[in-house]
Amino acid sequence: MKHFDPDSSPSPAVDTPLAAEVLDLTRRRRILDAPAPPLPGATRVFTVSNQKGGVGKTTSAVNLAAAFARLGARVLVIDLDPQGNASTALSIPHSHDVPGIYDVLVNDVPLSQVVQRSPEVGELYCVPSNIHLAGAEIELVADPESRFRLKAAVNEFLAGSPAPFHYVFIDCPPSLGLLTVNALVAAREVFIPIQCEYYALEGVTQLEDTINRIGAALNPDLRLTTILLTMFDGRTRLAQEVAENVRTHFPAQTLGTIIPRTVRVSEAPSYGQTILTYDPQSIGAVSYLEAAHEMANRHAATTGRS
Image (cartoon, helix red, strand yellow):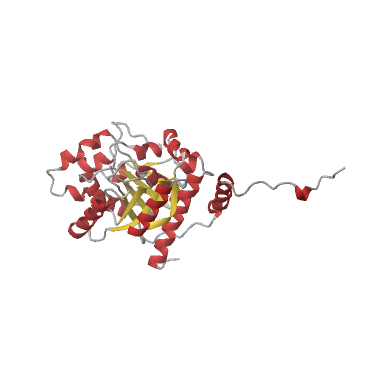
């Protein structure tokens, strides 16, 4: 009788795409227990912008904000999109009767009176949007100082805050109107999410031109510092070509971290949560934490802080 030899039994397949994906996720989950990156010495104010819709702009804004909050930062999200999707994802009430960013821009209400704290982990705050914001551009068009309203409100809020904020993310509408101009004037850094699909770079050149024009005329401190590749599907050659193309055009600004296309990230906002709360062990949550670490460490290396 032939005896069973355990050493001769077939080993589990580790070279299949699924097995490789599981092993990669297991390795990358170490970021969940990694030491927090350094906090910036001064508030970093980002405008999150891309005139092309559906690129993961709001998704990236809220998930990065949540990631930084979990890493010990004090974070503010300003929802400057009339659709109010950032407010929804952070579980912030934003019906038509809730005071928000419209009241700040049009009625000179201080930011401190409309800020709400998100139930997400950490010190994460949000200035909500509502449907009234859709008419703000028309109401402000006659004001010669209309482009500086958000900057003035943000500066006043940060100067009067009893505790410092480390990050501010301004989530813009997918257009280059007055609201986006306000965000670009108020910010020091521009963050652009780019979808890894055809026409990914469409509009980015125009946005870069707008950044340069606003920098020259209205905000000399403004810089395009961060590009994040989103909705990446590694199974397609197109996604890989797009990623390579973006890195070629923006080598210094493009993060090494890539956000994969995943259903869990898309599901989270419908529950009023970020992916870090909805499924903290998922590849989406891990990826946004990796992006936050990378952004913080890059900045520390550039400014010499440790």
